[in-house]
Image (cartoon, rainbow, N blue to C red; front, side, top):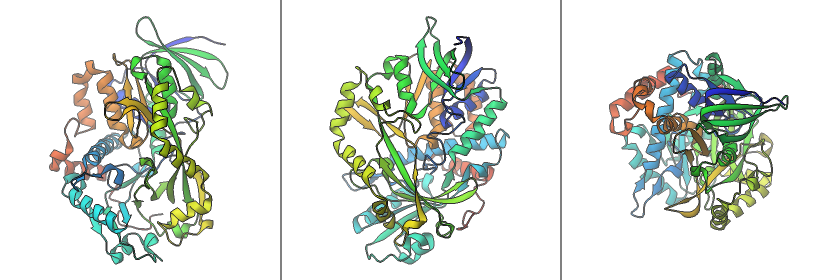
Length: 502
């Protein structure tokens, strides 16, 4: 057993989209800093960032109905949609900068243009969708959104969904042609290739077993080489814990007060994948429906065209499920092991509050393929069972914490950054919209953890992200400029209206 000690400036735990983004940002801001990455698996982007483990929507809030809610007075609150869209625009600007600077190439390998649509059925939901459309289309971020409740128009937009539809229930949809499909697995791999070229030390098959504070305020990590079994010690002034579901146990081991009274609730997912190319060719959009009553927000049903390995695929889901693992490659004891004296009451309160969610997840786990096909047929009336296979998606660990608004043990559906008071350690917890907002979230980490460099770094950040620090919504001219520039650089004008890109 070796115990050699290595010092570095920054340690990134986990080789997913978050560490890839933070590492890339820091390498642009301070090229001389020494950065080291540790990943438990054999390659980057294998857990939540993997293209088969996430929805790949490019969450821009163009189609997700759970980002817009109806207020008691009947008006539509689109503030969450605005916030998510602005964060996605920041990601797009950063990716454009990387492509323009030749730091990554072939953007078509990770991003494709694809219409984003919302679809609802039933009189009440059609009224809601129309009101949502009227509110959103007035906002410069969502200009160009179309609405239709005309079956002929919908047949043009979504032939696979409208074919053989016998129900006379009203149906309506909105459509945004500026949507995208993002392959976050491919992007993660590209960014790690770039970091390797920038002399970042990337160690796969290395598991971080412990993290402790040293007397001089740095962090000492105990790391196991899974290939040789040897143990190494690495110290760093700053540590980012970006290990997806594996972040919470490491945050707890750090002992920082900010990590106390936080729990995690794992939710697993399944997708159905179409294996019939003739069916795949008939659909060219991401179509989001409305979540069933009692379903968690990440279980909104959607029928998605995906581009994976330059091939067009069709996915439907997600069907939620429950597993006590915090990672797809995790342990059945992950959930139990995360219960500590400081969060046990928070966890118990969450359990009591979310009995209906737990019941829903158990019901979802028990669904047969026939039952799942019934749900799919609400989208594709003539779907045939033999054309669809099941695919297990990634694990998502939702944050449980005590909040002023929700009280003890509130289940949070979102992405959370937890940082130490002195900014020496940061951990990323939570799930959707996650990857799509990676750049904004990592800029937040940089602002919180390196405030002493804020002034010096700002010009470079503005070069990478022209809208940095300015709400886009208040600047329609800048929105147009950014949309035009990113679309051109990322090649999003290609085949925009072609329904059969293969």
